[in-house]
Amino acid sequence: MHKKLTVLVTGSSGLIGSEAVVWFDRLDWNIIGVDNNMRLHFFGPEGDTRWNLLWLKDNTRNFEHIDLDIRNRESVLKLFKEKFFNLIIHCAAQPSHDLAAKMPFDDWDVNATGTINLLEATRRYSKESPFIYMSTNKVYGDAPNEIPRIEYETRYDYKHPKDYDGIDESCRIDQCLHSLFGASKVAGDIIAQEYARYFSMPVGVFRGGCLTGGHHSGVELHGFLSYLVKVAINKKPYTIFGYKGKQVRDNIHSHDVIDAFYKFYLKPRAGEVYNIGGGRDNSISVLEAIHKLESLTGNKMQYNIVQENRRGDHVCYISNFKKLQIHYPDWKITMPIDTILEDLVRFEYEKKDKSFIS
Image (cartoon, rainbow, N blue to C red; front, side, top):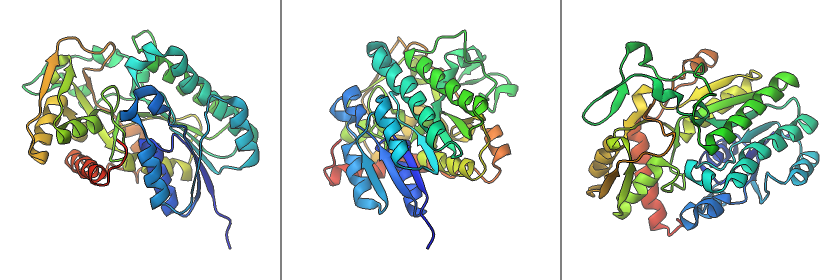
């Protein structure tokens, strides 16, 4: 009888983390999920992920949850000393621009210190195991806003054909405005690359576009489509911050993110950085998303547009993921934007019907 492989997933009650739990449970791995529900601390009751933890416990066979704070260095080292991990997927984060400015120490301690704690524990006890760091397109700061744009009726878009496929990994990450959140994620991003190169570890960095899926506990300050769906179904007002509602995001379902992670695990490339998002075909503006959700739910949405945008916010961001496809040609986007929206709406109705914590 073969020995089961074990994966560590941080942020296991969040969107990407819980998708990883489900994926590896289906592969019959042992899954150790680390999550201390910091979203409740960050966002209040709307950000509470306990409903998702309960869902995972009810719907998986090989999942063990550990209430551990990745900021606690000794606890992290103790966990790695006691358990060997064949793969580490690090998704835990403080994910909000706005909150980072109000909680700079919490933001830094989770995103930067928590990351180096995990990397060092991996180096000491599981050095040969692939380590995947879930980074963000916010490491590019507002540099993408320098790309010339054209304004259409419902969206902004890139003006020149050379920019059609979006932002690739050559976009600079310094000498621009990030938000404190973006800066702390840059720190995690760079230290992950450094551990890969300096210590010859199989670490990969994935810079996510707009990540989404039914297991997202979306709130106003984080989780664009998830929160928009929640608002549409519950007939609540929605505020659009700046850019006339024409700001564009490319959206990728969490399933497609974990598919890329798994392909990296099978053939890791130390120190590589990949942009991962929905790309051109899965790009949508806020106004376009509202119109689609009105059609899907039958509810007329109440929204207002304020002139001031969030500082450092992208006007138009589309991920160029060609590098990822070149290195892993079997990887592709499997869920188009309309399917993603349908999945989000279905899952939100299921949560309401089952009276999950929301």
